[in-house]
Image (cartoon, rainbow, N blue to C red; front, side):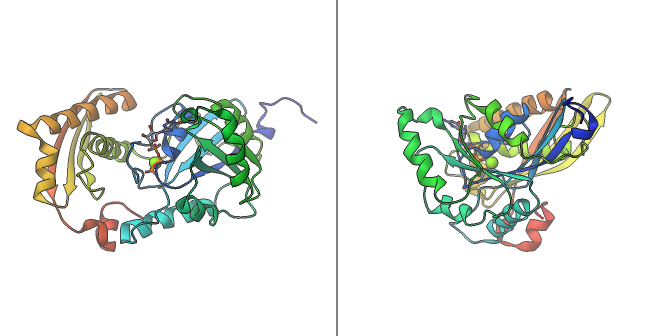
Amino acid sequence: MNTSSSTPENFRCGYIAIVGRPNVGKSTLMNVLIGAKVSITSRKAQTTRHRITGIQTVDDAQFIYVDTPGFQTRHSNALNKTLNKTVTNTLISADVILYLVEAGTFGPADQQVVDLLPKEVPVILVINKSDRVKDKAALMPFAQEIAAKHNFTAIVPVSAKLRFQVDALQAEIKKYLPENAPIFGPDDITDRSEKFLAAEIVREKVFRLVGDELPYTSTVLIEQFEQEGDLRRIFAAVLVERDTHKSMLIGNKGARLKEISTQSRLDMEKLFGGPVYLEIWIKVKSGWADNEAGLRAYGYE
Ligand SMILES: Nc1nc2c(ncn2[C@@H]2O[C@H](COP(=O)(O)OP(=O)(O)OP(=O)(O)O)[C@@H](O)[C@H]2O)c(=O)[nH]1
Ligand SMILES: [Mg+2]
């Protein structure tokens, strides 16, 4: 038997689904696991709207994480139905599942996701935001309470924000990856295009810089994406439902839009590794989130 850990024969590669209710820190965790920011994050629920892969390749393994939208239980419009379908489809094809909860909180929305967990796939219970719990001893009974709800293969408390126990989690995940040749190249960090990532970055800044007054139903379209040598020229449109939302985004004398543009451009330059020229327009288009055809037109599967 070959005992070396880096021979192609015992290379491990597989899909790891990251699921949980909205806002538990799924995207933050995926980004720290792969060491790059491919999935946007914000303090608002329902930040992630698509299935997004984040890839990490080490000597003897390739981890293909699949970040999913938080499972929606509040409203049942077409957008939310589509988001939930993304979650259930991802669960079916995973080799390992990370089921995330927030330390100290477990509610009906968390229970609904437990109910979706398949019995035949290993599931690791990840207790995130453990930095928020001052009395660490209190985590034990909390972990036991959730452990009773499903046959979890492991329980790992982490803090995605502080990178606490992230390596321990990765070591645990690796045990369940099947022996397979790598699917992606060693330097790939996602299977999403730069155009998709650009739209997501703008959406993140809109989410973060505009207060809770702006409903979650705003989306971003990249109308033009051109590369001339090193320079990427990007024209983005933010679609909002109402005129009042448009003025919120533009802000006093355009100050808010300017901030959104600047922060977006800086993030794009970091991720793409080159200069970016970015223009952002705000457009009013009502009803897109409650219309199946509209959703397809904007890239929702
Ligand atoms: N204190 C603390 N905050 C965290 C931690 N991980 C994530 N957060 C914060 O929790 C909020 C939600 O994080 P996201 O990663 O966007 O959560 P998500 O589960 O992907 O949310 P959806 O995509 O909306 O389902 C953000 O404000 C994060 O900064 C953590 O370990 N500790
Ligand atoms: Mg997310």
